[in-house]
Length: 267
Image (cartoon, rainbow, N blue to C red):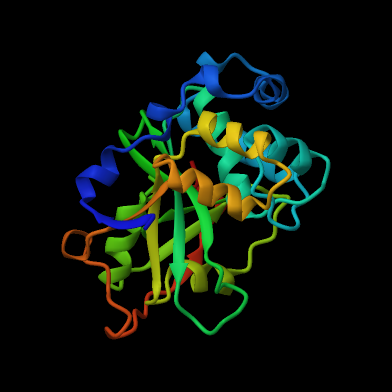
């Protein structure tokens, strides 16, 4: 199985960059990066870089069907307007963060619902901010951060989970003027009781790129199965409920509401 329960400390300490060095990232990412970050990287904070990358990707990728391709092929297809869903966007965002010295993680949402629009779940990222000294949840496909009331510091995944459990007010801020965000859709993704976040670990770009390119004549699902048989597959790690206190599907529904945040309070 590719799913398991893990401790909060293990999930907190995991970093995509640790198993995906810059040298394993395809040259295309470095080429496009010059268009994304035109100023010297040293002049930008982690959050400024994270936002610029997210905005550029969202504004230059039309989206469409899921790809499941190698990191190089996926990016080429997405730039050409040949598809790409939230998980594809999270995949390429990971690699741009690596080459820009931003620590990053990729998360997924397992959603148990009859609502077909969100039944397939959702993918998003978390980046480490050295200025805030903490992890920050960033949804690249929706171009949003989350906040709690008057705080000017965006939330991490575990902070969002905690506030959701405590039925506290949660705000979101859209940092990209070119995107349209459906408040109800965001609430349905993140705040319904049966939405459970999991961290994607052990995804080695070099390994998956090799198999996906070498065996491109096979269906992507079969290739992922073959990688699993080699013991080098990614893993879905769910935080232990006793540690992060995520509600069980049969628990009382959470009544937390999500609110759009005023731009003046953004980073």
